[in-house]
Image (cartoon, rainbow, N blue to C red; front, side, top):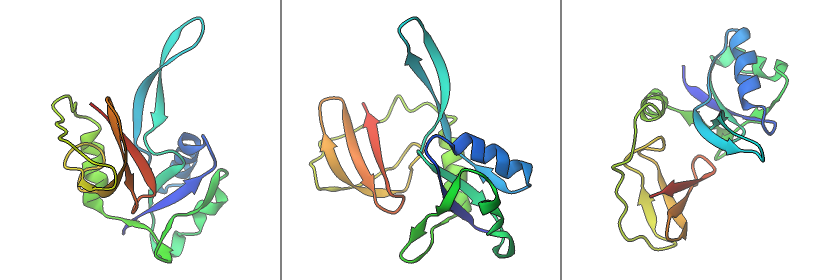
Length: 152
């Protein structure tokens, strides 16, 4: 069985994940911990790494069961077919989120150049550099349909 990507309503990723798991569909939503500041306090919260996306592993016969879950909008398509994510990519994503990447090294990069990510949660993905400034680089990962900002 392959992994597929479903698109969710905004800020519904974790609720959709929980609901899918309740109906015995294997699902994964990569999350990171962020510190958010309010006027009176700071708080660590868990947020999805990729907004509005949840990865699911489901067989062909049960692929429409996901639409019974509130918050699911549609499957993500790539070149007219449901986007497939391979096991090694999910495993790499899970493993990379448990590591610290303080040793990440970035060299001179120009807007418009192609860049392959060799480390971190988007390891082995290639994208186009869309923005570079003093503290971070933004890369468009066309296959995933996301922009990734790498802070260094």
